[in-house]
Length: 244
Image (cartoon, rainbow, N blue to C red; front, top):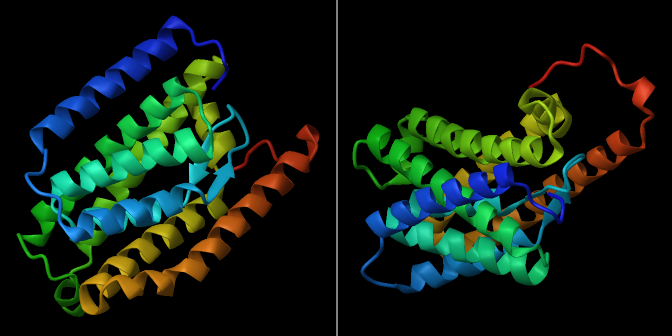
């Protein structure tokens, strides 16, 4: 986003913040167990692994992996607070983004986590045993909860970029996310999130280490891909490139 924010941008941020506040109030946790603090730290670690998107000055972090894992293993209220606080800490302190961007990004994180948690809870039928769900090949809760998180996250970024850059949302989507590589990377990140959550349930916090290196590789690969895309001349881009 640019430093000067127009009325439409501020309206978008206000709407997202209001929706996130209502979501947080309606799901506020009553306790703060050790698991909450672990996932807060894990999500902050994910925030510092970030990739700059091609347009709009937007960024994409690997926090989606940890946010998704958190919504699978924590009660909804705890997952919401942990992921929102992690977004605020990571973007304000590590990335030093302006307050408007911090508010917007933490708000759509809350909405994405809440949607993913709700979808998983409904489809899993109340089961919290992730290993059993996978062993029984009940993959739909994982697939659709990840899709819900992804859709809200990407839609929020697209709307913000389109509003700030005064461009068509479809064009903002195409230029930031319209490649097969981005879709493949996103699938890998959410797969690692599901893997992290199941390992956490099975062997505890040490399971985080099993996804650290693959996640760093995914981050580096996406960063290299975006740099190569930025370095290509405009007339070298295919005009009929598919939007994934």
